[in-house]
Image 1: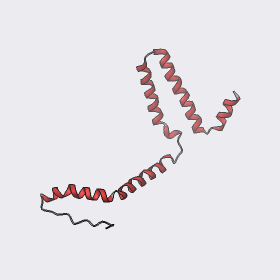
Image 2: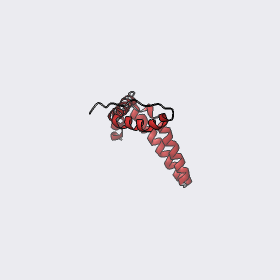
Image 3: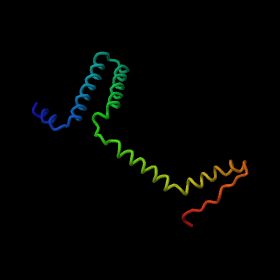
Image 4: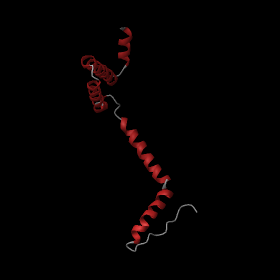
Length: 115
């Protein structure tokens, strides 16, 4: 019992809440399996538990959890767009030229940054 109390004292409030919710969810799934002996019913209860954990995840995650992720995704999108400029500009020109030809419009010649 001393090990368990030392473990719980070392955890923050959010992590204790997560551990308690995990124990309740695990016991609910095991109780459903024991009571019904039906894998479909147990799967439905397990799916509901996973859905509830996903909905309640902001409770035990740090406050600034998503900020860095948004920044990294934005940086990846911008970098991917900038690095693929030579590919997508030529591709868009090849796709747009036939459509613009029907209206007797021409695209200006594209100059690349490199020779």
